[in-house]
Image 1 (cartoon, helix red, strand yellow):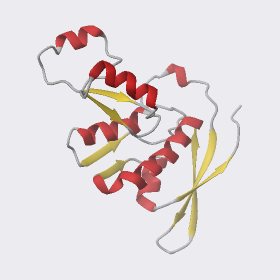
Image 2 (spheres, rainbow, N blue to C red):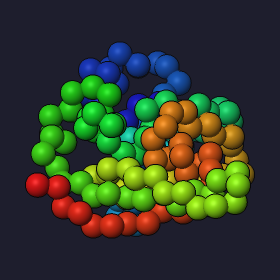
Image 3 (cartoon, one colour):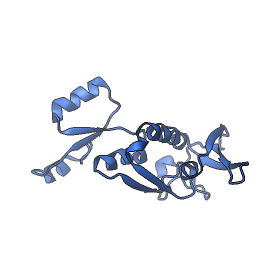
Length: 167
């Protein structure tokens, strides 16, 4: 699988191999027509949302995997304030919001756990559950860790927003 955004030398290096072009697409008619005119039937549209993590689930499914384990797919800031496991300076200084996961404890009482999220992380949560609702019967997904998505998946938590702009 190669993305159309790959450097032409990558395509040259794959000459003679079984290559499928995958394209992150919004399913607009003009976009589809352009891709079809250039690639014919030799491309796949990868649905899934606005982040690389969401698209990776679809791409892995296309490759035939039905059991997926996700690590680092937290959709929230780490307790130490990091937004990624590695330096990603273009996200430094972005605004963030407190999100509250409403958990049902084993005793049947409510508990609240607070997570700090950027707007794209909060949107990723929304898109993830919409994607899961539509496609979740096609694969088994385990999200590891203590981040927002893992907490929601493992507890069935409901999510609430309290807008607090970080200064």
